[in-house]
Image (tube, rainbow, N blue to C red; front, side, top):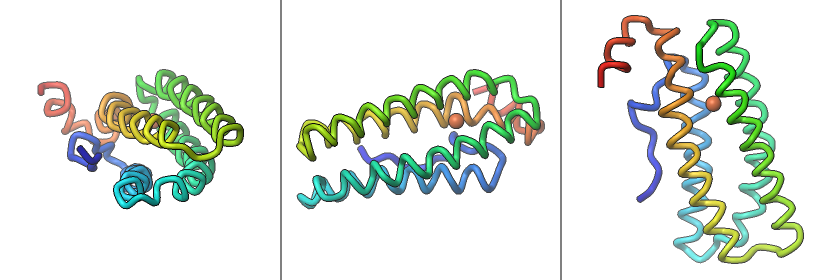
Amino acid sequence: MPLVWTDAMRTGSVEIDFQHRELIRQVESLHEAMRQGRGKEELARTLDFMAQYVKRHFAAEEALMERVQCPAAQENKDAHGKLIERLGELRRKFDQEGANTTLLLEMYQELSKWLANHICKVDAQLRLCLEPQGAVCAQGR
Ligand SMILES: [Fe+2]
């Protein structure tokens, strides 16, 4: 099942939602490349992209959560730190082993699962701070 941006991922920030869509788009382009047999070439590019974009995105999101005193701010920071560590591990693996199908699958599955889970459960809590009228909806379901 491809990862798609859904309404449940909405954070109430146009900028953050845009960055999330971009992250999903990149992970899905890895999936598409795998399907077309170009996954190995795409792996290095995705690793480079993630390393750069994720840092910029995490910094923006953490600053916003702090500014609006989102209760998920610390949990969010911790989760980001773990993902950055994990991306470093994947990069080292790639440098040692080169692109292979196992690493490709591991990376796609982990990243798509992490993004879906993290955006819905942690990042979307921003919505409660940015759109207080949405709180009933977000908590009630
Ligand atoms: Fe986050």
